[in-house]
Image: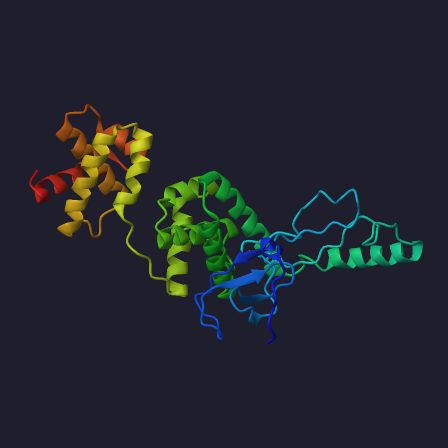
Length: 315
């Protein structure tokens, strides 16, 4: 590598590049990168370390004067939640070339034939049609349940694995995608119950739970136990309880987890019972019915969990 001489006033276009290594020639840790030429070199002796860097800026394209200010990106990123993973080729309907000039008559006919065959070649495989319907349902669930992109990606991954195993054959696509979403929620610790997902997609709990057990068994998934503390904020918000009640319930659940008496219990029921116990201890007049409706469990379940927590914690 040759030395790079830095002209006067040229350092304004340079920026510091922290690579965590020292210069091989002078031993100083003063690496600089030139955004114009893509060279990385030492700021002390000018020794060139690398002649190229990857472009990290936005990927826009503008060929005409009218589109110069339109800095739109070249396309959406690849995603497992898209039927073709976002890698499809799309032929634009504008009959213009890259410079904006109109195409000739013969080229228009050629492009029209290519466009026709491109549309015919898409979504004709059964798996592709299946993915289109399933991920369309998944997109609606994302909006209804306010789910994150990472959770949607994990759901799409589980559904693709289920389709490869042939688990969707003979079963409803909404039921399997709802079961995959519930599995992703359980795996990531997202507080979404089976009842929430089944109501959002408008199918019965029994069908979703049946598909969920099938996915766990066939894909050999190991689901962690849901932490009842993560269900607390949701119940508090729906039941309109105070922060004092929430803190008391969190302390009760922490003590119960330390004594290892929460295993095998419904997390929403435990959180609801801890909240009701905190209400009783703090003298707040809140009924079991209000908390049960907010948690999505029955009053009998709250009474049973309440008695268990009260006896075992000796409150």
